[in-house]
Image (tube, helix red, strand yellow):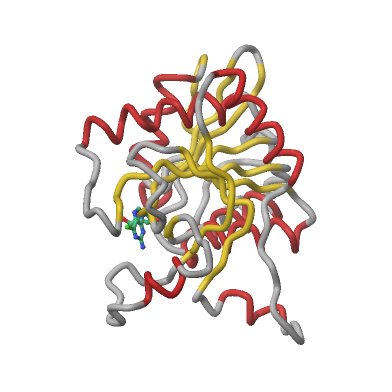
Length: 236
Ligand SMILES: Nc1nc(Cl)c2ncn([C@@H]3O[C@H](CO)[C@@H](O)[C@H]3O)c2n1
């Protein structure tokens, strides 16, 4: 009989730090743990969704993959907040730019997260919920970026359930509302945090541009993530 609270995570109580960085890709979680954390130890590997805990500049911090899409991040972040007593989750991901002023490698912070997902319907609200970032985390991320000389763009992002959208005009519609970039996880993370009374922030590196059709090479993706990582690690 397992004594872990969930089939998706084999970590024991106390294995996770209060702050968890959450890339989509578990291999990036492994890379982050091995590259940035002191004494990283793997705390879960269920379905190869790796999670690690270590320290950064003496502060305990964890990193765990969340997968692609809101159902996946919805599971892992819900469990971290509600079963593992995690206080804040910072998503560090990639996104496609919807605005001309954005350039590849820019760091975007999702102050809000629009969505086309049904995820919000579970709460039975009589209106439109606004999934938003935690202000304290947002403010600290912007201040840290300034200190590091990294330009960040703060605004609305779109968390879509669809990567290959059948509607050819969908990007133009979101673009017309000033939405900065499209990804697939932030809204569910923000809703889970709101419901659990916890904190969340989504930071994104622009890896594709949906209007210039530029996209980052694999090595530039890695490089671009470094700037975002240096900010995220300071938020523990
Ligand atoms: N819809 C969508 N579109 C574009 Cl142009 C993206 N660029 C990066 N992502 C992120 O990368 C994964 C899809 O490649 C998702 O986890 C998503 O969050 C994107 N998701």
